[in-house]
Amino acid sequence: MTHTTGSAPDAPEGVDTEKPSAARMYDWYLGGDQNWAVDREFGRRVEAIFPLIKEVARQNRQFLGRVVRAALDAGFRQFLDIGSGVPTVGNVHEVVAENLPEGEEATVVYVDYEPVAAAHATLLLERHGATGWAAMVQEDLRNPENIFRDPTTRRLIDFRKPVCLLMVAVFQFVGDDDHPVDLVERYRRELAPGSWLALSHLACDEASPADQAAIREFVDAYVHTSNPAWLRDRSEVEPLFGDWPLIEPGLTHLPDWRPDRAPNPLEAKARPFWWCGVAEKPGR
Ligand SMILES: C[S@@+](CC[C@H](N)C(=O)[O-])C[C@H]1O[C@@H](n2cnc3c(N)ncnc32)[C@H](O)[C@@H]1O
Image (cartoon, rainbow, N blue to C red):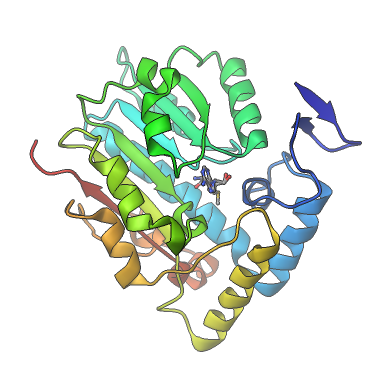
C-alpha cells in the first residue's frame, strides 16, 4: 500500500519521510526520483562537505555493471544482490538481460531493508515483466539466515550451484558491533565452491589529508540519518573476503577493477575513496 506526499514519489506505508535514508539519498546522488525533500536536503549538505559524492556513487554502479558482465562471461547464472538500493539505471537484472547469451536463463534476487527500495524494485520488476526470474526480498542483511530461508530466495537460487554474491557500497553501513567479518562469513559458508563475492567499501586511507578530513566530516553527517556510516581502511576491508582468494586484479580502487576505459579527471580524483574486489570460493 502507498500514499503520496505532495510531488514526492509514492511512499510505502510506514516509511519515515521525515528522516533521510541512505537508499533514497543514494538514489538522489545517481539522478533518480525516488527521494523526498528531506533526502535531497541532506544529500546537498553531504555534497557541500564532499563534492565527489555523486561521482563515487556512479563509480560503484559502474563497478557493479562490470562485475555482473564478468560473472556472466565466467558462466554465472545466479545473482544475489545484498543492499541493492532503490533501483536505478544499470540494475543487475538489466545488465543480465542485456548480456545473457541468447537462449540462456539467469535469476536475480535483490535484498534491501528499506521499504522504498523494496517497493520500487518490485514495481520495476513487474513493469519489466521480469518477476519470473528476478525478485526483491525485503530483509535486514544482518539476518542472513532469513534471506537464505526466504521462499523467494529459494524459488530463484539453487545454492548447490555457484552464486555471484554482490555487496556493493553497503558494508560501510554495518558497524563494528555487528561484526562485519563474521557476518560476511555467514553468507560465504552457504555458497557453493566457485561462487563469487563482489564487495566495495568506503575508505580514505590513500586520500590526501584534506580529503580525509572531508570524508570524515561526511561520515559524521550520516549519524543523523537512518544509516550511520563507517570508514574502513584496506587492512579492515581485506578480511571481509575471508579465505576466498581475490581474482584479478585483486583489491583495487573502483576505476581500477577491470576498467573498460581510462578514467576522466573527475573519476581519477574520486579514485581513493573506495576499495573493491571480487573473490572466488575455492574447491570447485
Ligand atoms: C549506498 S546504497 C548501495 C546500493 C547498491 N548496492 C549500489 O551499489 O548501487 C546502500 C544500500 O544498502 C541498504 N542497507 C544498508 N544497511 C542495510 C541492512 N542492514 N540491511 C539491508 N540493506 C541495508 C540501504 O538501504 C541502501 O539501499
